[in-house]
Length: 133
Figure 1 (cartoon, rainbow, N blue to C red):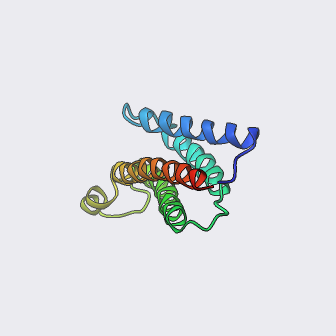
Figure 2: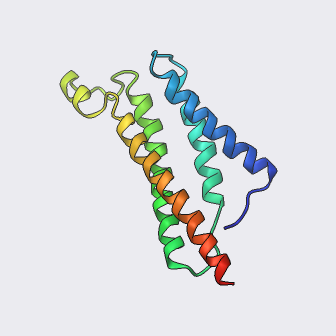
Figure 3: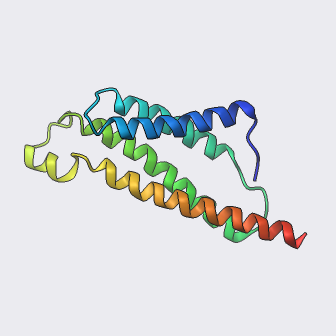
């Protein structure tokens, strides 16, 4: 895996921290929470997309694609977080509650589970690859 430099690593970690703070700040209804989460998601996902795998291991390539899917789900969570602040989409009240309101939590949960799984498996596969050499 391509390693990030110091600046990229700082952006990556700050983005992760902002995502946690933004998700947590949404519980009491803080209006700046979606902005914090979106800023963190942009930093986190962009730096994670810069970490490329240059090898030929099919398993790691598959896991990287799954990780990129979780990155997209983080960004979708940010968009749904903004949409949950008010009915800006001008949907009927029932449709809005049924399909939009607080559905960001579901996409965030799926993204976090995929992220945990792929991170663990990629590190395991990279260790196996190093032992083969």
